[in-house]
Image (cartoon, rainbow, N blue to C red):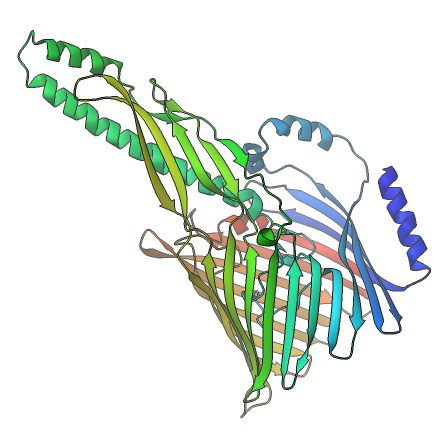
Length: 497
C-alpha cells in the first residue's frame, strides 16, 4: 500500500509540471462462458503526460486498474496447483486495491537526419484491422477486459529517419514480454501433448515386447528352464506405463544479453500510389516451450517427466502495404505478411525403460527422439479491402492465414473477417465477425467469433457503451476454442479529461 501511495503522489507532482489528459473507464459485465466468472466489474484510469522542451518530446502514459471477479475460473485450478488455497483466502479479503502499469514512458529527440526515441513505447502498428502479423516485437494481451488484443509496450531504443525517397525504422529491445494468455497455456499444453504421445508410444512398445515374450514362452515345452524364467519375467512386467506430473526447470542464462535481445529494421517507400514497407526482425516467442524432456521409467512402469523450458528465437521477414484505389477514392487496399523461421522445430525427448536382453538379463534401455512442435517455416498474413464514406461509415473485408494466438505446427488457421463502423447521429456502432478454419486431423474444422459495440456520443467527453464478445468452436483443438472463455456482455462507461 505504501508503494502505491508513493506512486500516486509522484504522479500528482509530475502532473503539475506536464500537460496531461486521460480517461476513466468503468465496466460491469456478465461472463457467460461455461467455466469462468459469472459477473465481474472493473475500474481503470489512464493518465497521459506530455511535454515539449526544444527538440525533445516527453510522454508518459500509465494505468491504475481495479478488477473484481465474482467467481474464479475452475479451469485455472490445474495451473495454480498448491497456490489455489492461498488465492482463495486472498479473494475473501475485500479491499479496493489498484494495480498500476506504465504503458509508455519515452523521450523523442528530434535531430537533423532522424528521430531518436528511448524508453518504453509502442511500435507503429501495421495496416491491417484484425491484427498486425508484420509487427512481432511487442507482446499482446488477449484477455484484457478493457481493451482486448492490447499491444504491450516494449523497453528499448528506436531510431527513424529518411534517406531520399525511403524511410527507415530501427528498433532494439533487450527484454521479451509474454503474450497473455499464451504464456500460461502454451507451455502446459505442449508438454501435455508430448507426454501423452511419449507415454502412448512406450505403452505400445511394451505391449508388443510382452506379446513377443508370451509367444516365445508358449512355443517352448513344459519344464524348459527358459520357459520358467520367461513366465517369471512376464509376471513382473508392468500392466501399464504411467506418468506423474512434470517437473519443470528453466534454462539459466542472461536474459538481457545480445542473443536474447530483439531488434528489427524496416524500410518503406511509395510505389505506384501504395505505401510499401519491408522488414526483418529477430525476436523471441512470447511464451516458453520445452527444449528437452527426460523420461526415466522405473521397474513399476512409472516416470516423472523432467522438462527444461526455454524461449526460442525466430527470424521474421515481413511486408506491409496500403493504398487507395485508382478508380474509386473511397476504396483502399491493405495487407501484411510475415515469413517466420523458428530457432528449433522440435522438442528432444530422452526415454529410459527397464527391459531384458537376449540372455534374459535385466537392462536399462535408452532411446532418444525429437517431436516437432514448429514448422520449419510458416507464413502469417492478413489481406483486405476497405470502403469508407467520410468518417461515419467504414466497411472492410479481410482474408487471413493465421490468428494472433497461433504459432505451432499444424495450428495455423485460415479464414476471413468482416468489420463495420458506422455513426448515425449520436449513436455509433462497431462490429466484426470472424470465421476461421483449422486443419485438425486432416479435416478443416470451423470456428466463429463476433464482437459488437454500441455507444452513445451525444455528450462531450462522455461515452457509455454496451459490448458483446462471443466465440464458438465445436472442436476442442480449434484456435478459437480458448476464446470461448471470453464470452461476455458488458456495460462500459468512459469519461475523458
